[in-house]
Length: 189
Image 1 (cartoon, helix red, strand yellow):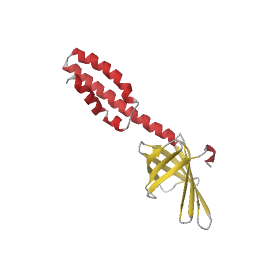
Image 2 (cartoon, rainbow, N blue to C red):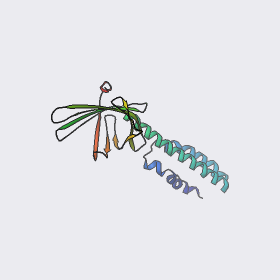
Image 3 (cartoon, rainbow, N blue to C red):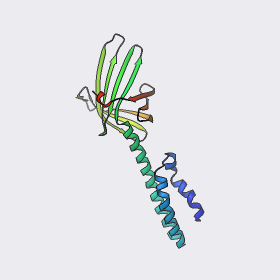
Image 4 (cartoon, helix red, strand yellow):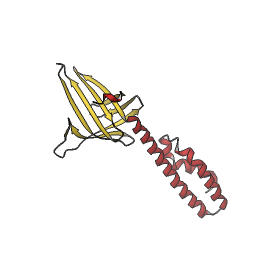
């Protein structure tokens, strides 16, 4: 392998990081790899080159995984807090207050009013997570009572965007994008 083919191999091995727009891991890896490349390619043996390429591949894959983990953790930290969702259809109005805790717990307080003005309140709680693509919630309690019958309840929504002031998910239950706006922390209950 000639030295001039190294940047091409580097691009192939980090294609996943480039697709994920990893701006942190790649620049940090390049000086170390360049130094190793200079040392090993000056020895001139094909065994040393093969060893170098194996070690470089391991570093690059680890760097790519690290970049993904950093991106997931950054988005997850943006989701922590209290969020408001205001919906209304056919004379019914719903107001949802969703609290996502840093400890992985959530509380979803729902107030619905119908056209007659009757208000119904429900509080759901459980565990939440973000896997890099979807916001997932596992419902454990409804109005303070544990779900019975061994039936597990889950909700998985694809995250469209997440900013510090709002996030948008694709709600497959209602079949549209839903927007949550950040609200003050004391609004949880």
